[in-house]
Length: 457
Image (tube, rainbow, N blue to C red):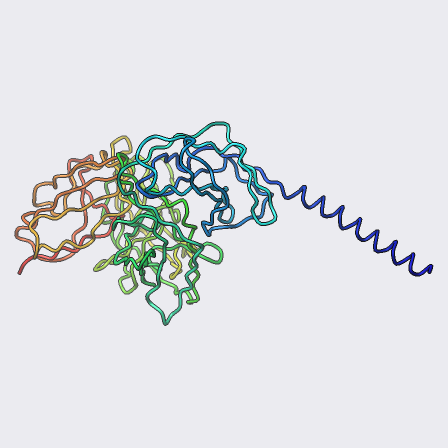
């Protein structure tokens, strides 16, 4: 009998302990998400699309990762239309709240109230807090809207093509750009999925190693009045891991190619390296020392290797007349490209650089297309994505011809018409973009790839 009583008391204590623990766990499972505003302050949605709201500050205490775009609650828009919503979060980022807006809601202005909304998410009770109601605009036009779950690419020596996959809410063959440098081509829609192939060589060209992986960010050209690049809110950062050993490249700086610079334009040197694949490192990948009569400066530099060119060293220049400081010891750069380690060899090049940062200029993020085929058309279009498009003037591909006729679209796009006659007397080949400089001449925009020009025989 005593043993039975002891057993009953033990079970009772365990039960009470579990109940106490359960109450404690339940208390810690209440989460508040304070909504700041529309993500990227974008309060417009197309015929079929997604409204996305962003948390005001990153909540480090909550370990929730969810990029599945699953809905967990319903709300009513303008006290009239019901819609389904959910939460979305990738690692080390703020919470996002999304609401699906479909074609049953007509165009117009609407309000949405998120404050006080509570719903169950797994073992959590989540409550939304917002100090305002939100007004959005439903447009009677298609606006690109893609999303995806987390994706990882593992580069292998025996595989060249890799697929990026995105789920479609709305897609109408809009231009997609990765890392603000490269346009995804040959994307194919299969039912409600968009599949975009990308080559290993292209990934190796543009990616920088970051601890164990490189990262891809997906952008699109916003077709509203801003004409700017925006990121997709509901596409997580795509990680790329390489299983391929890196190669050492020994670099000899041989010739100063571009010695004139303005605000946000670059100077460039040719190197002795030709037999490597294409490379575009970040424009501030590393620093080199330069000298003038008053002392020394550090210039931020990068490497560029394009089709039919040697590897180029491109650098920002400070104001004044400078020359490269003598490199007396090998400079080793292991962390600026996913495929190559670069080893700059000692050199003494004292050719003068003339820079006037008071003069306007700007650099080119990317251009598209990179091939112009005049065997089928007499006039073709090139879009330049430029930080300050109005500051880059006198754009040409052939300095012997008139400058191209260009117009600025929105904040960041300069659209230029390229007639076949621009290349009269020239042959098919690769042509770099040039722009007017402060010495009444032309300078090369070496940060952008040359355009392949195909002319009739």
